[in-house]
Amino acid sequence: MTVNNKLATAVSIALLSVAGSATAEVTLYDYTEATSAYEDAYLTGSFSANDGNGFDQSSYSASLGFDAERVFSSASRNTTIEADAAGSISRGSADGANSVSYFDAGIAGQVDTYFRPNSKGAFWFGAASLDAEKDQEDFGSTVGVGLGYGRVVNATP
Image 1 (cartoon, rainbow, N blue to C red):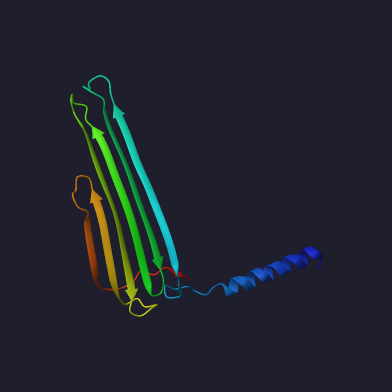
Image 2: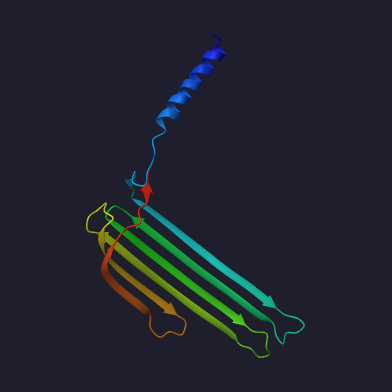
């Protein structure tokens, strides 16, 4: 047997033995509970302007938005924090039209704590939010506590 034949035979045997051991099926229940965290943020915006024939005055419209979320997940607790803000300004093309603006911002959080860690069962939660809006005299706020059942699992097979 030449060296090339020996090498080809060895590689073939190695591939067949790996393929034979990799045939175990993975099911939805074959996972390890993961401790994880993720965050995402989005910034959106738009602008448009019009002027010329057929317009009494130039018109425009602009908007800007921000949305962020951070989630921590463990066997015993899930924590979510969210923040968002949005604003816009516009003016129509009719003669003497005034500009109109709007602003809104908020922050919210929730903690789900499981009675039995690593369970998909019952939990208690606490949540709160605070928001502000243009021309609003007071901040808007909510607070809540309660019981829940179920879970979304971040799983690693």
